Image 1 (tube, rainbow, N blue to C red):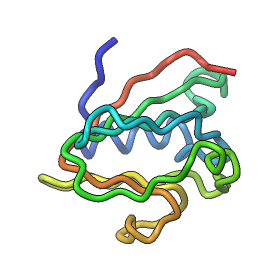
Image 2: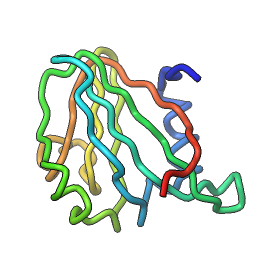
Image 3: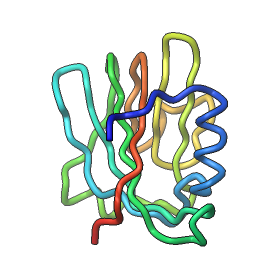
Length: 123
C-alpha cells in the first residue's frame, strides 16, 4: 500500500485514533534518501478495539532533523506520545508533547510534506 498524504483533517483523525501514539513504541527510523526519512511506530488503534498496529510516517523534503542511534530508540519516553504539525509547505514530527516547539524534542524530523501507511503489528 502506498503512503497516503496527510492533511490537517486526516492528521487530526489519525492522531485521535492512535491516541497520539502514547505508550507506543518507536520501531525504526530510516533515512530513505538525503531528503526523505521514515519513522515507524507500534501503537494501539482505538478504531480496532485497541489492537496493536504499526504506522509508518514518511517525511519528504527534510530540511532539519535530530535523530538518535538505533540503540537509543528504545529508551526514548513515549508516555507523552508524538507531536505532528502540518502547515502549508512545512511539516514536522517529534517524540513527546512539543506543540509549536518540534525542534526542541529529543528526536524530530522537519520537512515539506508527510504521508503515512498503516501496517501489520511487528513484534
